[in-house]
Amino acid sequence: MFKPLSLALILLATLVSAPIAFASEARQTVEILHAALLESMKGGAQLGFEGRREQLAPVLDEVFDFRTISRLVTGRHWAGMSETQQGEFVGVFAQLSASTYAENFDEFGGQKFETRTSEKKKNAEVVRTVLLSPDGDEVSLNYLLARHGEEWRIVNVIAEGVSDISLKRTEYAAVIGQEGVGGLIAKLRAKVASYGSKAP
Image (cartoon, rainbow, N blue to C red; front, side, top):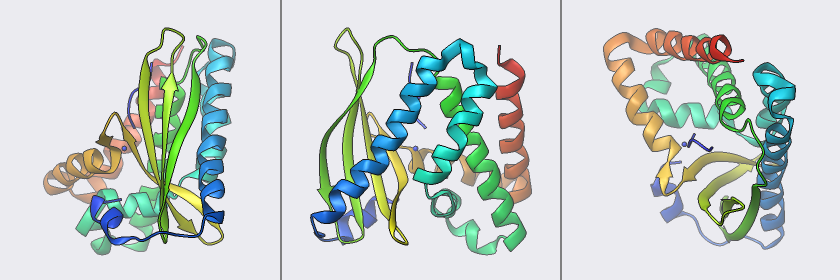
C-alpha cells in the first residue's frame, strides 16, 4: 500500500534540545499530512488519480520545505545550478511528490496513522509515527522537521529506517553525473507525466 518517498544524518548529531512548546507544532504539521493522506485514501477511485493529486498538492506545499529538500537531494550540484534551474527543480520535485503520494495512497481499508513519540531539537524535531493496518501490520514513518520562518516543515521522511533524502541523493547524483542537471529535471518531468498516463 505504501511506498517510501525519502536532512543528512549529521544534522541530527549537531542539534540540541529545544523548548517543549515547539513539539506540538511539529507534530501538528505531520498530522496535517496524515489527515490529508487518509482523505486521499478514502476518496480512492471516486476522486481518481488526478483528483487525489490536486487535493494533496496544496497540503504538501504547506507541510514540506521543498526548497531545502531540493538542495539536500542535489547535494554539491545545487550551488552550481542557476536560479532558474533551482526554481524548475523545486517545482518538478513538488509535482513528483504529489504524484507519488496520490499513486500510493489510493485506497482505504481501515488504516490509521498513530504518532508515537517526538524528539525535540534546537532547530529541528523528529516525529515518529506508524501507519497501522487492521491486521496489525505497522509501517514505520519518521519525519525530520525544521523551522521554516514561524512554521515547522518536513525536510525528510524515513520509512522503515530508510531515508528518502539518502535514496534520492544517490539516485540523482548518478543522473546528474551522466546527463547534467537539465537531464535530471527532464527525467523527473517524464516521471510525473508517466503517473498521469497510467492513472485509471
